[in-house]
Length: 125
Image (tube, rainbow, N blue to C red):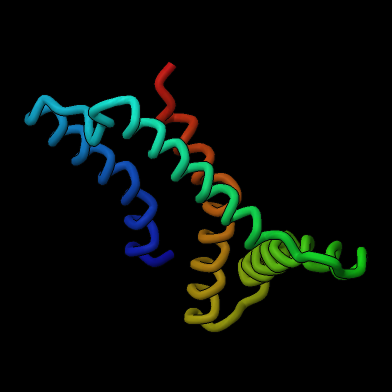
């Protein structure tokens, strides 16, 4: 597997570590609202952002089979990529093709598990 791909998995943790060091040195906790009005504006901005994301994901008035097909696109493509990568491990293929398959599979696995796992470890309990 490409070393750059492996190192890119640590980018979120390194950036959070750098941010934590800066906050420790400056004594700050990041950008915080100064008053209630700013806090309400931040909450409203989050709500508008989530509403916009929901509108982008909605498909409107289409047939049910089209909605089902659209909903299965990401999982089916992810499964195909992982199966392709697995097949490159058992069938001798060109080294460049194996590297491409491994990089695609690593991005699919990170999409499925990495972000949620990182957020679980980052959570402060």
